[in-house]
Image (cartoon, rainbow, N blue to C red; front, side, top):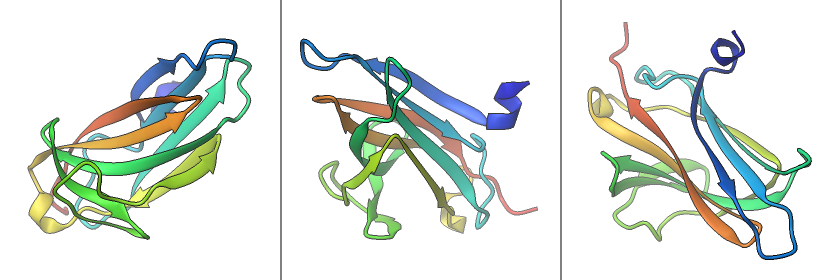
Amino acid sequence: MRAVALGFVAFLLLVTAAAGTNPVRATLATSTPKPVVDQPWRYTIRVQDQAGKPVRARMRLQLLLGTTTVVGCWKGSAMTQCQTASEGTWIAFKGKRTGVLTFPTQSVGVRLTFQAVVVAGGRTVRLRAPVTVQPAP
């Protein structure tokens, strides 16, 4: 029942930090794997230590065509077209970051992957969620 309340949970990854520090856990949850065009779609990134305490992190948000080709990235305050994985704005946060995206009409039916490249505890992880945008009802 809790999974229904939280929506679609994409991935759970454990990141082992440098020797002598606690492992860091990073998770990605989304409202659905099938967002509707021009409707709010929510994501939440959490980064915590073993005790569940918030950890400082930074991340880059990207949209991939399939699972490999970067086609969109977060720049400033919006998702824009990108061609390389190194483009986009780093977003700093502690513990939790929630955001909302809307997908344009041209993304309907395209198999995309929402990716958060998270850096925390001296390691980098890629949290991914498959997304197939649906037409408006």
